[in-house]
Length: 114
Length: 114
Image (cartoon, rainbow over all chains, first blue to last red; front, top):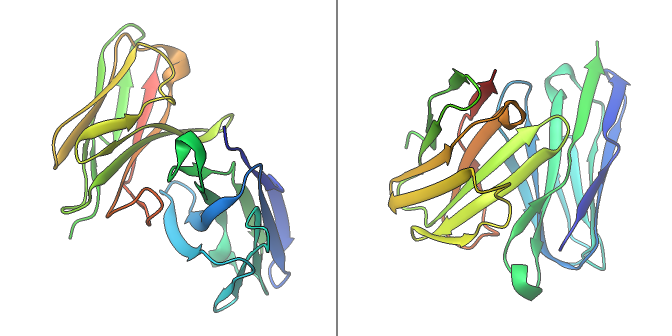
């Protein structure tokens, strides 16, 4: 079945440094979503990318979807302590028996030191 | 809207006991998902429903787990008998349409099996 791998598993940064997490799928995706989970909380939707090569920005966050629709990245510029949490990517199956199913990556746990 | 509602928020039980987790999805959402989250295995999809019908239960770990959705506003996940390795946070999520639409997560139930 489809696998979505996310790296790194952990990232520790000083406040003000940049942060990037990468998501790779074993199969072509129909779309990719990104979620953020604060410590002790639940995953909250951030954004969805659908088109090949798509780039979207939310303030200090930049999301990219690869040309082949098999990888994605989330980049945070000048991290703040409020960025602390786990960032998940979730890929939608483009075909096969699991068509339409959303598969979550393992997540990247971000720690920001003030 | 109140969002996805889960109960109980915390459950502590002894090995061998039956555990029932409850979920009320957002009104009007056609899809309901049950996830399990642990440090070791991350966020795992257990089962999902479309219009109250189970579509994919391939993530259900074993026969001790069962899920039902008797109507559009209520779902249960039951573990019988429970084991210590079932300890995890169980999330319910719902989405408006296709499985690749935004998923809205509930606050989760933290289950501890002693």
